[in-house]
Image (cartoon, rainbow, N blue to C red; front, side):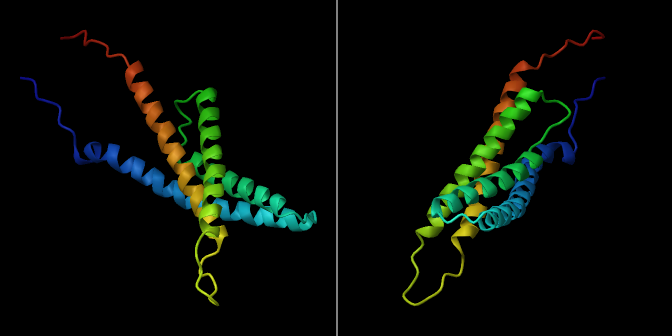
Length: 163
């Protein structure tokens, strides 16, 4: 008599919990590394004596985007079963998403209306870091989803030679 294969609770929840956990870890790493990238960008801006606001924004976008992209890449990394082309594509997607997210976050943060004579409670740099971390992780989710769909189509099922 053959019993049907039943999945235990861990196997049932794994497809749901793993992406949620990777996203949470990616956002946490992304925000921390994005803030570090912003600090490095600010230090380089001051150290080299740049005076243009465009130079500061470029340093901000790339520093924040690189930090958030690195955090998202670490969260969505699969070293054991990916080729170098897929890893490079994933890195390019999350770094590009981080840079675009930092640009969007800064635009959103600068557009916040502040009441007369009040100080802003949150700096546009905060929105830059948060935007870069969120968009970099969305790019990681998109790449992971495309990778899962492509791998599902490539899998072959070997017939059981015993039965």
